[in-house]
Amino acid sequence: MDAAEATLVAPEETELPSDRVADLVEYIVCGLVDDEDAVSLDVTDSEGSSLIEVSCSEEDAGRVIGRKGRTIKAIRTLARALGQRVGTAVEVEVVG
Image (cartoon, rainbow, N blue to C red; front, side, top):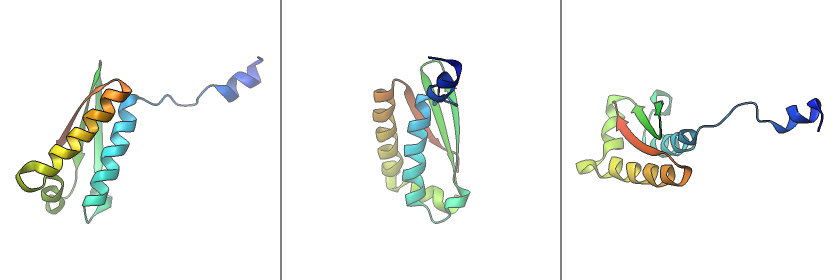
């Protein structure tokens, strides 16, 4: 394989395992809120684990958390399950 072929095969950007989990969390949260533009995720990776902090408008934070925290608990369960499949421990927090 020559140098030209190597540039075609090699990925331009390495995707972290937490990127897939963050995409899932963002997809779920954006489906719950009224103001999707106010949703942002801050992903902090450390060795073998990731912290995903979800920021949204105060009005939508209640929807993301849900009654008695049931919605955020379900989001955390899904994120942890995907994280386990891709090989990283995941925590999800709502910053509000």
